Image (cartoon, rainbow, N blue to C red; front, top):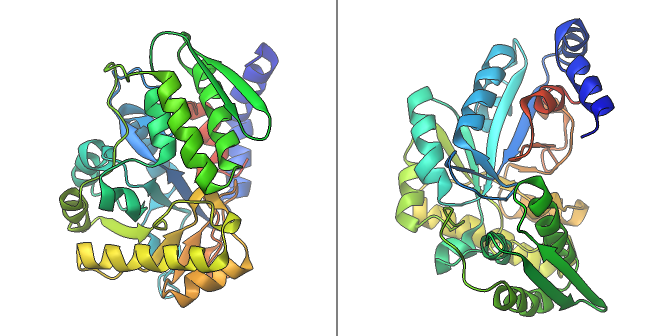
Length: 327
C-alpha cells in the first residue's frame, strides 16, 4: 500500500473522522454480518486469505464487542427481538478443521455466538475441496511454475516470496479455475497438484472436519450449523436441477449428522440469482446469505440474499474498522 493510501486509511479509521463515520453508519442500529472461513495458528507460514490467525480473530471480536452486540443469526432474524444497538453476526464458510481446533475454544471461552455454514461433500468424503487442495499444494518454500490451458495457455510463478505477494498469485489461479466448467476444473486441479510437487510440512494443511467433530460443534449452545451446498460449485454456473439437488442434499446430510434442524444457507462464493433463492426456499431454509460490503436490516432485506462482509488473513484492523461500518 502506498504512503498516501496508508495515511488516508489512518485518518479514516481513527480519531474524530472515524467517530463521525461510525455514528452515521450505525445510527439506525443496523446488523453487520461477517463472513470468515477458518482460523489457524499464529505461528504457521500459511499464505491463504481464508485462514485468519486466531490472535487476529480475538482482536477483531474484542473490537466488535465495543460497538456491536454480537448475536446469533436466529436472534438477528427474530422480529420479536428488535435491536437496541447495532448488531454483529459472525459466520464461517466451508467446514475446515480449524473451526474445531481453533474456533471452538474461543467460542466456549467467550460464549461467542457463531454460525457455521458447512459444505457437506468434503465431510462425507474426508477429502478437501479442489481450492483447499491447491492452496495446500502452493505453500512450498521454493519457486513453483504452474502452467495450464483453459482455452489458452496460462503460466504462474509461485514463491519463494511469502505473504500477500504469494497469495495474489494463488488467488489468480483459483479465480481462473472458478470460471471453467466443473469437469475441466477437476482435471486442471490434478495438473496443478502434479506440477506443485509434494506438500511441505511448515503449516497446518486445510482439511475438512470429521463427522464426529461436526457433531461436537453442533452440540455447543453458541454454535448454529447452516448449509453451504453439497458440491460447493458456483450454483449459478451449473444447471438449476443440479444446484437444487446440492442444496437439498446438504440440508439432509447435516440434519442426519447433527440431529438438528438446519434452517440457514450460504451460497458458495456468494453467487446467487432469483432461481436459486426459490430453490433454497423450497428446500426448507429460512434464510440465505450472499457477499457484499454493507450493513443491513435483516427484517427489511430479502431473507434469501442477506449481505455479508468478508474478512480474511490480510485485512488489517484499520481496514476492518472501516469495513465494519460499511465503508
